[in-house]
Image (cartoon, rainbow, N blue to C red; front, side, top):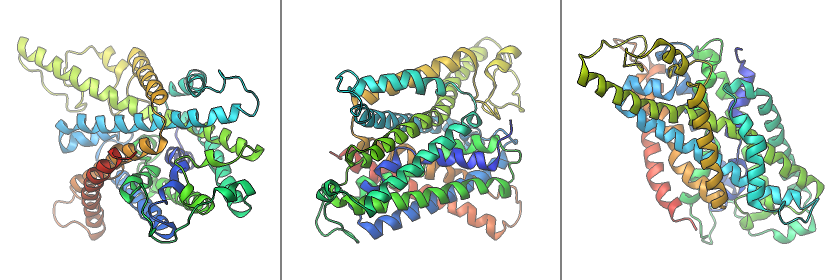
Length: 448
């Protein structure tokens, strides 16, 4: 089934509005109100430009076959495994953050109805959600299959936004007692945090780039004029939501804000519904991280399998001619049924693997996510590290490199001004991404 612009925008918005939305008010703490709003807007503009670049470079591969790996092979085939690894790590880290949110909120939700210690256990709740809800959704093979889940999840974000705004406009006495100092510009009093600790949260909040190519592949047309509407709608809506929640949340709690804002609200019916909505949001968002992580892990395994097969073939016979129509299938001795079964990275509408490989990799992601989630409890720390590494790589570094290396290569003479601007905006994103990664990762590793 061909996806529409609306379903694509919903999927992209759902991917962006995950655990990062809960930490957005916390990111204001070392910046203050106005600089925080400016940072949200700047990161949103950069994220949108990066998505526009992805829409532009999708034309350099056959329609319906765009992917990070496919485009990387056009630049330098040897880099594909590095970039697949970055995508896999980022998506895995985001999935872990979602399960941490489940572990934070489910005990609070269950405490409304029970005092049973087993049901109030963080690890038990993560286990139940993983087995009965997250795992079945993670085995879906098409992003478009999650379009209804995305609509439900976005409704959850809208409810959270209303909840935060209402508690800001009409705070209870309990919330007023929790309110700390508010800084409208950079705080004069130093915090344990510095701007490098929380800046990756702003980057993380807009990271949906790993699903952009899959969304483009599911569209009827990959023309830039058509596809650009998807990130324009999604990032604009995300910007509005982040400004509303970030400002209202910070103004409500001030410097006493924590990494997961909804944990601060007292046990009322409205806050319980909000917690349920957030659990629903992250539960439905996990498959959107599993989809690209699974594809990238498959490409990494395929890279080593093909390399070993090539070495084996070279040592026993003369090299077989390269199949130019399918550059990833280097060993022509492969049985055609194997090729059809495993398919190629240019798979247009499904994940690029089937059968046993699909099941094994999906199970490995789920099991690893589960064990890390029950071992780590700091959402802010996870978001800071993932934002500094994987999010920066996928949002700035990779799209920027694609844009600079590929845009304009079809022009043999002068490159038009608009095309040149896109090309060098890619270079700017690439350089800034490297700087952000190095500086913010150093700070995130020191975060207590």
